[in-house]
Length: 147
Image (cartoon, rainbow, N blue to C red; front, side):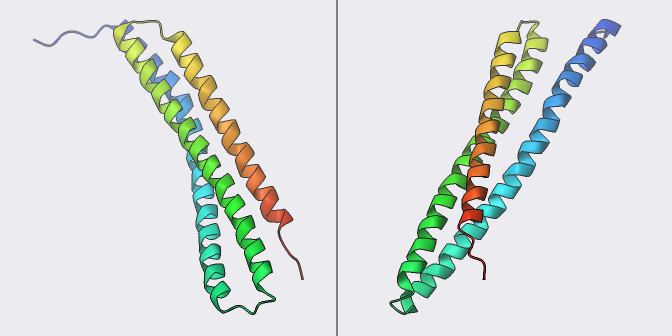
């Protein structure tokens, strides 16, 4: 025989779902940033491959400029890699915080400190991802040679 679900239980479940929805918007933002970062990484790698091919047949006077650009691309790749790492870490921490909210509700346990700590860590990781993204963009702009 099925166990009757009280109005309070339904209210509790719906409240937990409401609490979990807000971090989903954050996950969407993080996912968008990760998509941008992945595209930037692909462009950096593609450009490095082109330069590697050019290096083999380049005249001697062009070699230092190609090597300098490759060095800049390596730094940019490093910053994007750090941004992706911190962005992914932020997303994982948000997911874990959502899971902890649900586990706390199911087990009727106080998880306030754990959820707050996870959220603070997630925000710290997301800020770090954005800082490294900004660093990479600034380096890309600074290395741009016009005309």
